[in-house]
Image 1 (cartoon, rainbow, N blue to C red):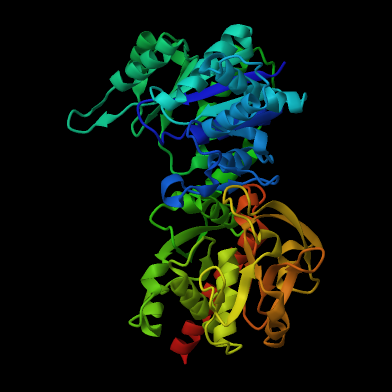
Image 2: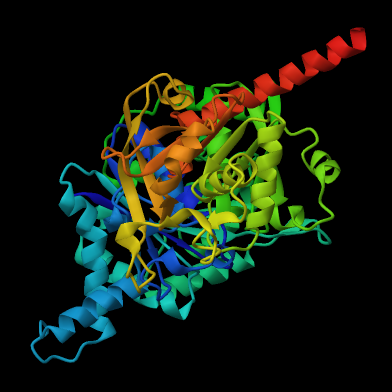
Length: 551
């Protein structure tokens, strides 16, 4: 039987449960165990696919097309594994499943209740990853929200039942709490943690480990106090101090012997992990020999979590380039209006060595994205477009190079005379919005001798998608005559996956989302190449300026 670790949070949200789970998975995998992680979210949406990025942050898409919580991105990045739909569950999906069974008469006339029907479905989903793959050693399950929330109670009750129905060494509970520092008093306070654990114990769950999130060292005295009032050994109180990089968290956990103690609690005999390469990677992230600045022109920049995978992909891409990437966030709406001319654009992009235009939906901020792309194209600045970024690049080239006035996307302008971007054939007639886009991993054939080939170095790749609109094939010949190269296509040749401009130092865009497959030890080729091109662009500009000064 696999072992199970349940991770909960208390006091406040956003404590970093996802990072804690991912870091723990990283350490257990380094100990030779096969680990899978899953996230249970209490909200009633079936998945986050129809939720606003401002409310929920990024929607992370898996190979099988599942639209998931962004924490699954952390799980994949830290453990370098590919997850699936079975690793994400919401209350909405639980109730959807149960009500579908009830309508089919599967409950044989019984009254359908939270206990046992809802909790039984949750317990079934807890065990599903290990049942689907008998080689799994440990399943880590994160419960979203905060202990005390009404909507999370069925999940906590299911955990209580699960632990009661199995042997004590088959599962462990990790609870994250906040230990605030009161600056006026000059001390940290343990009372919120005590109350949170009391709330959890009132439900019937005694945590085996506590991770105390704090901006200050909690100290031995506070650890002893927390252990005493929360009924667990002092050594099981983990100092979850703020760190400069999330990739430090596995190292801080290991320094406190958390992974060793957890394995002992679960009866797992494992060797010590070799974290040499991870330490070397973290050292480079914290103190890179070089730095480069890349502008990200988006429409959700007020909430950085809306572009979480992009931020992480730049960190990963900096590692092989031995450079830290300073991410300059630019609201695309700030680039709109007649008053925004070339002088204003030069001011906005001053000191930036590359430009990325990410994905998104709707017409808000599109003129600003198009204007940013034109500036990058005309000034030879390395550019990468993602999903909507590719579509905006096609619109910009159609207008300014092909001379197609009012060229646009049917998504934003149904009356455009030149819909260079239009609705995919398979999307026509679809009414429901949730889970109906082109989702998940699809193959892409890469043309030899192109920039895309230089980035990937192989003829076919698999990338994750999330879109309804595509390049209109009726205009492909016109674009080709204008110098656009479609360097990546679907195997049948019908869908444009990658476009590029050979006359530009580095101008490439993808219909898919490369950021979703980037890992710290396997940076995505397109991000790695963009950072390298940005460094070259910066160095070239310096050389040109030096030459002018010498002259």
